[in-house]
Image (cartoon, rainbow, N blue to C red; front, side, top):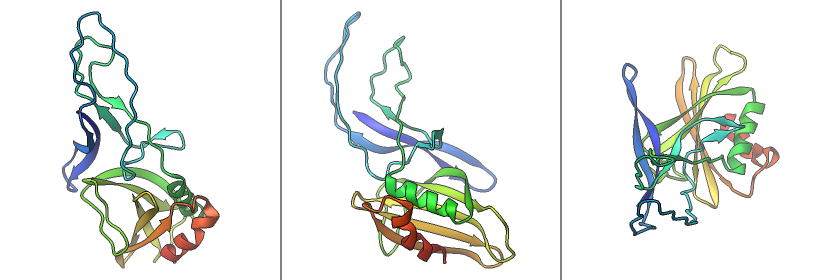
Length: 197
């Protein structure tokens, strides 16, 4: 059986740790024994769930997702059976992230959190979700201290949840669904401006 896995962050303010979690599983693709000095080559295609966390953003690694096949071959080229996957955000997600940066925020970290997302417009299906955390480029007394952005992509549209942490006011949550054909900053702008206003 093949599994796509990632590491999610668990714990509280004092103790934090990572735990691997299964994002998706596929039925056994190979049911045979490979003998000594025998080579077997197979091509296959696996479709990842659209909510799978991105691992790369603008050429930088932001998370780890790997394929684990169960083919544990001692002294093999890759004996760890942790084949890394390169997953980039969708064009809609990239446009939203760029729009937020154009609005005066800078991305400072990403996390994979345990749990799910549920709003009036959408809900997630995986056991974890990815947060993109932004800080404002300039401070204001009552302005946002931080934005946390989470995406829930169902294939046809992308749900965007923004948690706004404001000084003296606390956290506020806003969400909206954006059709996936909106894949430029200009096309996502009206949606994101509503969330940030």
